[in-house]
Amino acid sequence: MLCSVNLLIAVVRYFCERVHDSLCSKASAGTSGTT
Image (cartoon, rainbow, N blue to C red; front, side):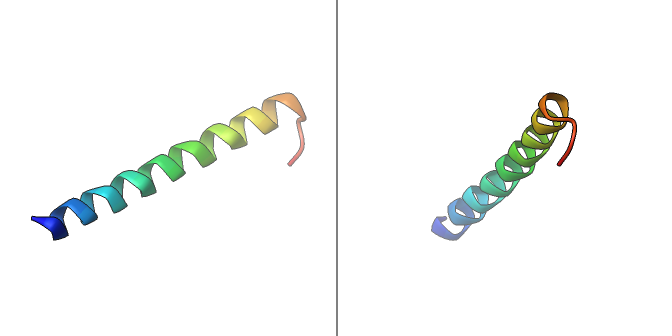
């Protein structure tokens, strides 16, 4: 049970990081135009 919870948390954190990175990339590209 605990292992599956830790795995779920790891997957959620990974997904959130991916989404956050993509959003930051779009935001920085839209505002500054250069990275």
